[in-house]
Length: 490
Image 1 (cartoon, one colour):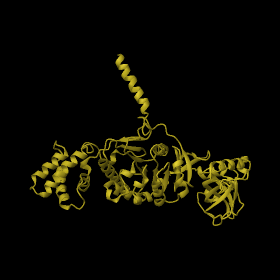
Image 2 (tube, rainbow, N blue to C red):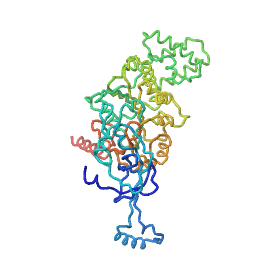
Image 3 (cartoon, rainbow, N blue to C red):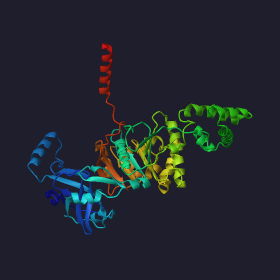
Image 4 (cartoon, rainbow, N blue to C red):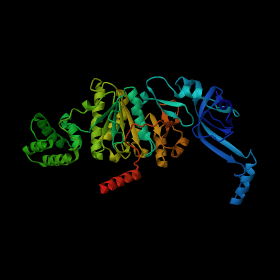
């Protein structure tokens, strides 16, 4: 234990509560520092949620102009007792129980005058460094050097939301989770909307998947859903189902599925229903031709267990991406429900740009939103974990976000986003949300079931990932000009 650990930071003042209190400090205290103190029930751990410096002279109502402020500064500088450093503490629980992976809040507050200390390294290691394959290292405490581990089992069973503005490190954090999953042979399916997760060809445990679907592996209802026939349009669905059944029975024909379906419809007696179904098929052909591939293997056969399967949706528009996500997730959830299908072990589903697929506006409801919501509610029972990633929290469906048992939050600037997170989720002190704009890239607030206590963490940098970084436009322009100049000389 260092000399600094033995020296108190300050002492508790009046009006302490079992869950929060203020203390007067010897120095300015940083947001996020972890402290210890005695309570009638034993040593407890606290989190600095607010810090301020008061001055009696500067609080004087007589300071009404700049010159008076200069004089107050000169006098205050000669008076060591003028400044008063005050920190607000959020009580996290009793230290002994943290060391046993339990969280117990004291029922009695610390007495006024109780001394406050820096949480020493020995205590922090017992809290944040855990044994067992389910614990993965993600970085170190922002206000210290102690490594921080999180429980990936809690993500697989209780889900995770990664929320941060662009450039704050959310894709790096997911890449780190991918890297750690490789060490424990985890299975993930990542829907990569912007191609941010490109890796070297020899990157371990990465399996790239083209977002193609074989239409012949769909049921007639699934096919009707994908081409946009409403669920309550019974006559249209019956007409399509009959044509789809005949086309599947005669696959030896050379024409593609669209031509065969239209030919089957044309052999039936013309009526308003067949005409309308034909129009829907022609519109779907334009939207889905790049997705449907009659020669590929079944959707689930493309997935490799014990690997991170990255589905690159860069070339898809939003509607096509919704269809792909919906199809894959329905097949995955149904397969895991049977527990004897192609996916023999639990899987993690990661969805980038989640706000586009599970919008908060119920009028924007889509097929992907329905199945994602179902997985958020029921996936834990069948071994389907969910990770949603977004820079626009308030645009995410409230019911889905509320199901996320763990959170990783970085730089969130908009107050509306901050308040939305606070209202929808649990275990986040409102004071901490107000400080989110001050976090630097790679710094995150981790909270929820996957970590022992809410903590500010410096996330480890992943170097293997090729996509997702900001473009160096100036450097690329310079290279292009040099290439053009060389071509002119030649």
